[in-house]
Length: 368
Image (cartoon, rainbow, N blue to C red; front, side, top):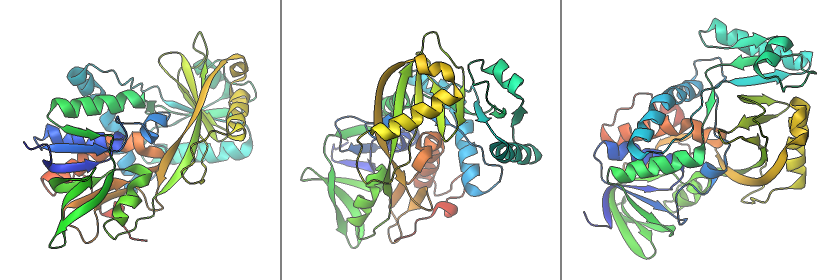
């Protein structure tokens, strides 16, 4: 096959683009993935903490999408390990949401009760039950709710595994050059311009995170997908201090398989600025030490920030209005890692059969 031609051209090499490439190539579709960075997964897909949580109690489309994606993780982790020999470190350890006062307790216990009444899992724990699970949690807590089906994953390894899996099935990668335009014939997109050359394809997928709107603007369709900075702190505790994700006081604490601990994450609408700030780091560390006092003695390793793609009605999944062969898959905001498996599956179904196993209409695009 010509290097400048494919059945589907995917623009964006983060976890969403790589998941779509993986699912399409498994279906014998010829794919070329175009990424402006010199390697895949260098932006939000690398920066995230890898938490996989779905706590909503309703059957609305978005919670259903999240649950469906979370349910795909066990088999996908096994599949990627077999195909690529990469362990994505999927750990279904559950999330422990701690509370310190009556107001927090009312909200979390109410959520747990609604979940159980609607057939979902959640367990309200006393302080003693909480300490039995996680002895390092503060003695000042009033209790906790356990969400047992949650997990976490080592997201940089997952992006690598998805890309390697796609490559094993024949995907081509064009790295290190941004898309600068599209070529149309009779109003239909037939190619995308990269480094002065045109890449031709039958269909195009824009999976460029918070840069996706810049690309749709080249097609005269502005979509308001904003960057939202999220800062992360990496600590190290030996021996490991906690076994499962703990959230509370507006932060989460995530134990990694290598003994390190992630604290996250701020939510800052500050444009494309990825500079960590003392204030953001301090807020997370202060909250983490209140939740788990022994973290005050841990080793500070580093901090970083990533840019999540925020869309007010997100995520955006489906064809661009006015185009029958250009698909947008972006706007996942805080749940890009969680939603990667189901997004890859649904977009692959859309492009190969036109029928999706979950409806995409709730996530249809609206121009702004």
